Image 1: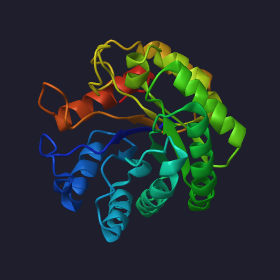
Image 2: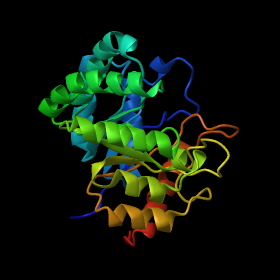
Image 3: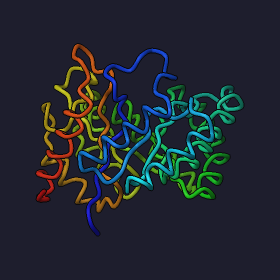
Image 4: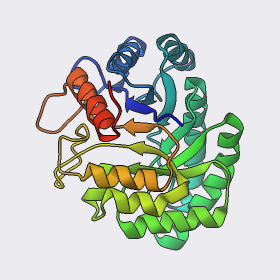
Length: 270
């Protein structure tokens, strides 16, 4: 199977304003064209939930025109950490899923809210039993992201394994792993066959910089080897930031740097 590489959508006009609506249909189209022009095969939609349904559908068509695979979408509605929050979260999660389906992606990335273990386990069970069948019907895998410690990731894996639901897996965020005391390789091996997508990003071990891979101190050879060891078959997705701390965003430069580094890392000639 040929390796495929993707990048998340970056606001193409510098720093993303607080008003997320600034990342409108036209800006998304520019971002997708930028991703494709830098040589990537696919994309993740980082800011899609404020778009109108017809705009989400239009972006799917834009990807087809560009020859770009719409691979994943990042929902900013967290999986609830308490049973009391499930009823409020579910309609919002379904709306995120419907938007992801309109975009034509095969994975929706989710964060998981914290909470007391038993209450959180029950909340996750109620939520995923409701959401996973709808995701499977849409051809979408729900990918829970590592956002905390190894113990938290182990809890999430055990909960998902016990539920044994279709269309539920994990997303490795390499930067988050480092910030919470793991190497990305450790987190990847814990996720194993459950790994559905990636957020490949770099940092210096101090904060969530979301740098292009190769610009920080993460061991990318070990990370690559772990991805190959678990026989990861999905898109190798980059997640870099349009709001980086203490530096100005460089959409084209950062996107191109990420593409070139990963192709070199995996031994792919230009």
